[in-house]
Length: 255
Length: 336
Image 1 (cartoon, each protein chain N blue to C red):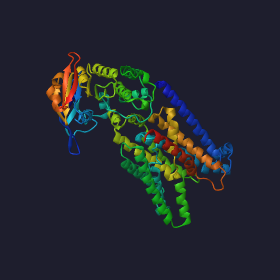
Image 2: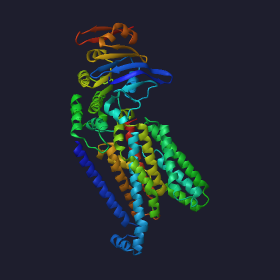
Image 3: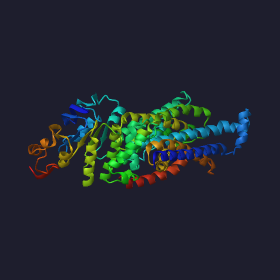
Image 4: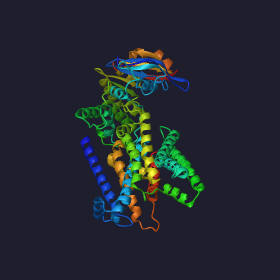
């Protein structure tokens, strides 16, 4: 078990954004986190990344409590991709992706062959080659998302937490990003991804967690979690299923 | 560009800046009301001959040039560090009030205890003032500060410090005291001794040392505080480190030369395109650039023929304020 949340809660202004949520991720798993807007998915991801302290419960990363873990060590094991992260200075795309190597480098150290290899691999995987020399502040939403994912991949973490990495992408890059995450989550690595597209979730993820109003309401194999009853209760829609090997789920009417 | 080319480009830039600093330093020794034959003056001084030239060199020109050098470097470096920390090209020690906070506290000490208290009280008071102003602005503007909020908070703190200084000027007992206080607010490097230099040196160096190694963390902050945190940066710690460093270095500079504005704003901005806009690489370049600019300005006030000698802070403000206007107009287009 690489990452485990033991009944974690996040309370802000007397509201439980995350309410005693339990989650675990094994090595080689691509785990999807789904739920309607405001269900607490991003908040939970922040707790899993150790970016916010839990108000109750705890998060264990490779068996160690993430709250007391050395920040440098944590940043080598875990990478987190924000939902629509800012880019404050007009650095080139390549230099932004290079920032991903920071956890592995000393303050005065130069890039080694290993660093360059990781950076080039991340650029190829996310199709950022043509953007390489562009000013990162002028990218479109989808291009920026790919660049920020490349930054996280360049860090070569054991576990990757990605917050809606396909939300702003065109169809080709949605499939490409899901494939990259799928390929990433092999061996001793794993990935947790927040998704809104239930078809992609059903098709690519090993397991799903369904959140509603801060609570974890269902978890298990994708098609077990995505049943009509759950979707009606949580998303308040009726859906059509289909596809077989490449499942699709389409909402047809509000409840 | 790959890493090797970056390192090469950085070396070239730093070398260029270093050469300009050295040239300006030598010019600063040679140029003045009395042109100084440098070789003769140096050889007299080294022989221990107390010629007029040797005395002008060792007791007037050298302290003046050294103080301009390290005060300018502090202002440039701290401007670059503040801009990196707040991720805002309009941040600088002058605009966010660190400098005026330092000046107010220094004037306070001058007013109440000039000559009575020990000489090291002045720089310490200036540092506390700088720290207080910086933290207050930060508390008002918040962590995800927009350009507008930050500038407004800076205006408020500057207004407060100026009001305090005006009050002290108003209540000053003698024309002599008024003159001394006014000199502070103008910014001036004339009539400084080696004693002043040695007094400002330790805190200045302490401030610089604190900023060593923050470059990479400022780079990570480019992606926002949260992402930087996920990359191993501890934003809270970094913030205090930069605030303390700026307070030490700017406090020491202001305590010695008064308020010299706009260097911390202009220098990082001019150099940023040459370092690929990377906040970390900007730090050393800005330190050298700041030193070069203050040395140049201090030479400028000596060669501009005015009846009453110009104060160096007046000159930097005359150049810097229009530049600031230009920046605001541009950032309005980009950010607001």
